[in-house]
Image 1 (cartoon, rainbow, N blue to C red):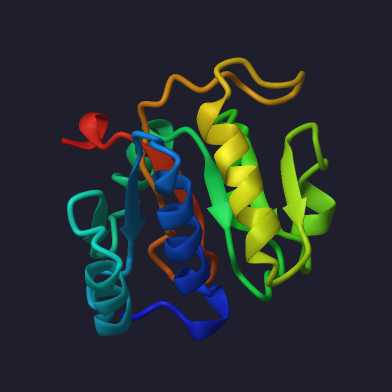
Image 2: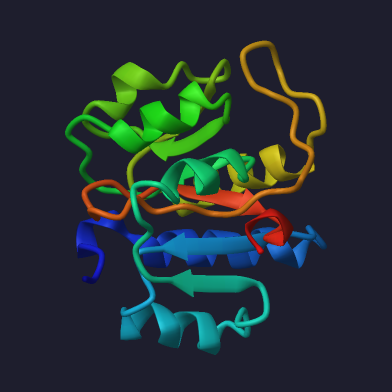
Amino acid sequence: GRPANSKRIDLLVDAFAQVLINGADLRLLLVGCGDSPQIHQQVDHLGLSDVVLLSSQLSDAEMPIAIASCDILCSTSEYEGFGLTIIEGMASGLPVVAMAVGGVRDLVSNDETGFLVPSGNTTIFTDRLRKLARIDLLQPGLRGIDRKGAVFLDSDLTSLTVRIGHLDRLK
């Protein structure tokens, strides 16, 4: 399947590219996006093929492994009813960068468990992502980042969740 347009994966890829400009040593794994020609084209156009991995959907058994291997959970979705993937990431102790939409506003405590960003504001989203990518010890409620992670999109494509870091632990 392909991710819904409302997930705004294009915004995430653009934000990731901006974070890399400052020399961050990160990788992006988009699970469930492997069959999307639009995302492939954007990644290629931005010259990110070496640092962005587009994967097909993961099995239920593989999902917790992907989540545990990541450092930051991101959601660029324009709509999020409940945010199950955000809950799963937070249960694993991951800080979240997410657009402040739907149920996400009830899940993420801004500046405590992550950052809420006005919907569609890629400038602030990129800034918050950059901040988490460079901080080793985060504020109380946010876990320290060891920069060994990946990016994650849940396999039923109802909720986009992205995790950033190195892909070493997924190999």
